[in-house]
Image (tube, rainbow, N blue to C red; front, side):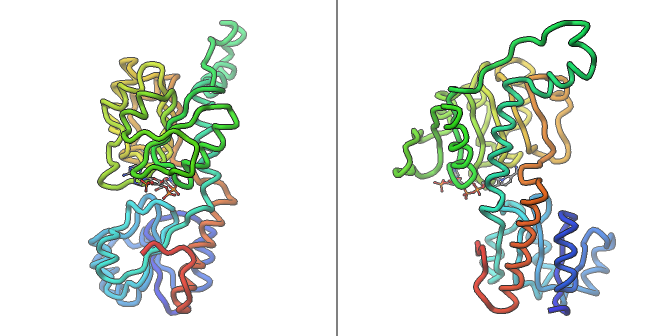
Length: 314
Ligand code: NAP
């Protein structure tokens, strides 16, 4: 397999780079600033693309690679891959489901607790010496027992629900289809879900349908005591509306792992203590990223050995 060209779309994991280099002819796209010259020289030998949540395989890249057979994504989300084009051209697509579910759900709960209990603001208070000079920190908001609404009750949404149940939180959800086997309350629209929960967690895939699924109306329905947690994708939320709602006090708080134009984060949020900002680290533990890398490599090996793919999407 050493002669098979594999193109990594952007830097994502040193371990993955090492494992791919051991087996394939690895091209690191970011090392080739002259893209036209790169394609002219190497396009025909590249049979696989490895992408992630930052860069995948869009229509232009697919068109530039006539020998492309498979796109193996180092992510569960497929929003950076032109799935329709892959289907049309018979290009296989794989992702990394399940292995990252627990980490992302853990982080969602972490965001809820840090935002409601002001954990980051408390830490800044102590480090700045303000405990000594200004006295006790202001009171914060209780998590246990709050109603948690989840948009997209899939693998990650369900793992968030299980964790929130341990905090005795009533759980409700919105997705395209009701899950009759689950005991959680279903709302047939995001607006109804937001109107009936204290904490709204975004955990659905990013598609044309879910872009700005959290809009001004939804934010207003969540209200001045409501908390928005986004561990899905940035464009799920109308960010300009989110910022103005937080600045104007129409929304109680937000815990965000993802943003509309990463790594750009609206600077107006930096001054707000009711907001916790993370740099898209939902699956970012050593253990999980290595497990994701093993799945990417396993899928590529299976494909080129003509065995069944481990986690096929297309
Ligand atoms: P999943 O198991 O496929 O679950 C997705 C859920 O969303 C399903 O229950 C689906 O239910 C629902 N859904 C799909 N389209 C919808 C729509 N138009 N409106 C409302 N609900 C919809 O996926 P997962 O493994 O839980 O991952 C979910 C997403 O999390 C990924 O796509 C990714 O974007 C994001 N993620 C983020 C990070 C991070 O680092 N922050 C890490 C991993 C994943 P129905 O089919 O019934 O609608």
